[in-house]
Length: 276
Ligand SMILES: [Zn+2]
Image: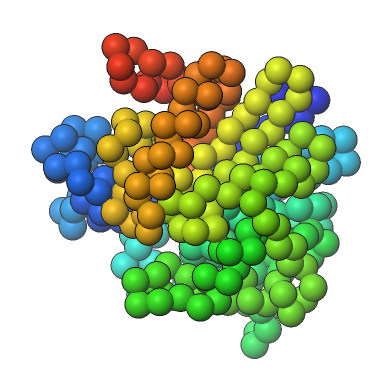
């Protein structure tokens, strides 16, 4: 899809599954399962979306999916049932790994940063050898020092090798990382989660990160219980959703079907309309 001078595309690295109750926080199952049916283990299936942004010679990749390093047990636990699609999807769009100039991880959970690196014998190498990998400084610090609550979501092999290889770029708060591409830290899901905005002229694309994993999280109280700061998520939704409507942002989610759409308000409810 064109967005001003940018070419933007969204695709899925594959499906994984998390407990549906955890995905919808305080919302009772009788409500969420009408939107997203659970399997026999009470899990809901979700895509792991990656965003590709091209502008002249620049190739920016947002998120790298769960990647190729999961053990059989991890795949079972997280309901990952296929091989990672990231490199196949990039190749289908004519992008080779060494052509990616920038990788943005919205945060460092394994389902967003797993494809950052791969194993070559004993070594862990950057999947995108010429790219800078951009992460919020707070996310980096928290990922390297996880606590009992957060430990299960971070895998150091996904990000620690990037620092050693000199490929890491830490940013603070709100930055325009390339002309027209903005990152904003939004505390909520984690302290250092960042959203992505791509703008040219009046056109803006907003990539939600896990601040709002999919369209079912548009209603204000639908906030995952994984969020470490759920009331901050709530406050941010109250600011961002009206702005997304007023400025007619194109919106894409991390864990929805890979697609773009617009948000509108209908009788007090936020609604997502897909665009072709
Ligand atoms: Zn996620």
